[in-house]
Image (tube, rainbow, N blue to C red; front, side, top):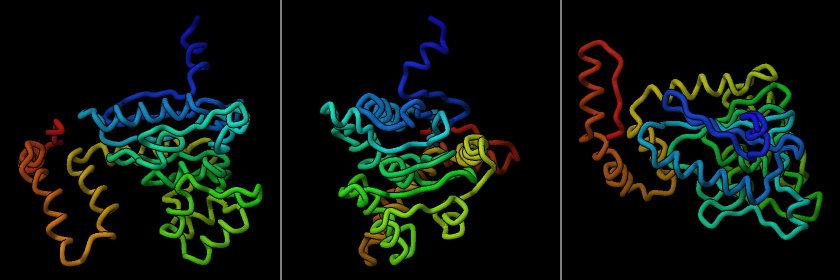
Amino acid sequence: MTSSDTNAERPLLVSDNNGVRTLTLNRPAARNAVNLALAMAIDEALTEFDERRDLTVAVLAANGPTFCAGMDLKAFLRGERPITPRRGFAGIVQEPPRKPIIAAVDGPAVAGGFEIVLACDMIVAAENAFFALPEVKRGLVAAGGGLLRLPGRLPYHLAMELALTGKQISAVEAERLGLVNKVVAPGTAVAAATELAAEVAACGPLAVAATKKILQDSPSWPVAEAFERQSELTEPVRSSADAVEGARAFTEKRAPVWTGS
């Protein structure tokens, strides 16, 4: 069996390069719909990603013309539920990684596919991409985090319109509204997301992880406790070997060599 044959059988492809982990949904014949095997593979890959000191940021991409069509309904009818105990649907939506993850979206991301994208920290989308939560059209509710996250990413009334009608929103319109970081030519979303990831990976990994957590959690902190809680996250970074290395590299006019410690 060749390596390409082996890859074709894997629901998720994982590769690491220069501090960047790339996860590629690999069920193109099923429009990358999420079954239990894919959900478990994503959960495992993200857990290892968070534990590895040499990895700072991840890119989530997909093979084929569709980024992700959501839950695999055929598998659902066979009794599968693509949910992991720790991270929920698709092995990501309930507990995304503590490190940054960038969605590279080529083609449609609908239903659970859109919810996967919303669980990511940044979004690079091709011009042919679009997003939708069409569950209400099927008498269902988008319970994979879409309804929880969308009002914080779009104006309230627009989030309501999209969720209550199941309408699509194009990548271009999503960028205009601030939902998408960057729109690129079809077929180039992964390259553009990887370029953005490289910028993140050039920074101190401990600082990157702490910065993400502060940005995510601080809106719910009581104002009187905000600086104290922030300090709990920043002091370990300030006293780390990487902080010393960052200062030394700056004074020596060279690129820092991070150790994640």
